[in-house]
Length: 102
Length: 493
Image (cartoon, each protein chain N blue to C red):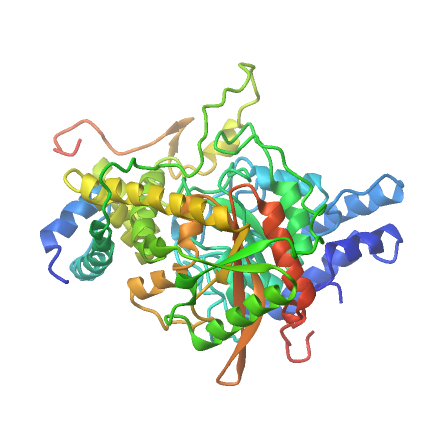
């Protein structure tokens, strides 16, 4: 069905996902995500009462490595990928301020 | 021509000095140079580094020391596995210039075994796709039919083998991304069990599914490479500490004492008729080899896509949150009063292509307040049922066979609708959901419009029973000739 999501729904999801969409994208994703969820809806046919969720296919226990110092990555190698630096710091726009998103 | 030569032949040629590692690598680079412009399997080539590493191998051989398992073997790496040389882009504008400060464990293991990394192969963006069309840097073409897709998301790695550009490549498989392109390109592709191979240095997509595995011309070559890749890694706590058996030891044992399960759901009418015929022939081949064919049921097969397309996007939306335009990757141009939110949203919208945006939004939605129980929790419960269904099936049989993909390679641009593309994975997602191992081997051809399109047979075994899976695959390969049929390159091969 194409009416599962409204335009506002998609804008809300995009905001949660930190994406900025134009009207054409919103309409396209509205239809496509609606179609995917329509298919996913088939899971409600199954009787899942009393079934424990399985988040990992194989039982894994926490593994502890020896508490011994290891060489870490070279700072220059790591920072060469940064889009904007100030000295050895990553530069970002103002975080504290008037904006309600801050 | 060396490109279709097995690893053991290459080793013998190096040993008796009839070949040098430099010669092998030059041959591979030369073929890439001549052929890859029409396939676009590779995104980046490391010619100079590869030749220098080959010289090192030749010097080692000259000393008379024992030569390592993959000495001089040219290997291509999927572009979502990091190397501390060149770039690793994941087929995305987001990481177009990304230079990893470290290398993946698998890259380290390959090089310790003497393998020569020759380049990175094209893939769907962040490994999300089944056709290697959803890439920021253009699609890969199927070597068998250039107007068709190679499958995906590891399409470049599969195409590189099919075109004879190199004998080994690595891919990653989250819901079928090694097995499905292996099927569509007519090569061997192995998805190991969850936890068998370290993912340290694999850019994460769906962390409870992702596995790295090899593509090869033959089952034996895949077994040799898996032996090099597999095993515990202190850098990946999800990598199992279980013993790695010698995958060659039982490879040639006959299958006469094995029970091979055929799920009736895998022989559905949704399959292309050529696929159905090829798989039925394969079942007959196993029966003629003396294996007992067991009729089994996996009724939850039909629920795999729905389960997968909740859990994998949920994990992806979380994993891809790291691409924020701050520490690495694309940062959008900002205007004067843009704040941190705009930095994130603009950078991610410009950096991610449509399929990645779609899955990130899907994952965000199924994890969001009010929908978590209806979708995510429900999918995780279904996941347990799917795993239990496999557990019961493996009480009846040692291995499960069926088609890898319901149809052969489709034309580039043919599937616009996401749901129909997701259906490519109907036989492969449940393997990943249950964490068991699966592989694809060539089992026939579909002749469509004068084109010869490969068909793949999927072999699945219990978690960590790769040895039996490889043995079952090897017996089919020994009894058939599909793997030996190669692409012709119009005077270049």
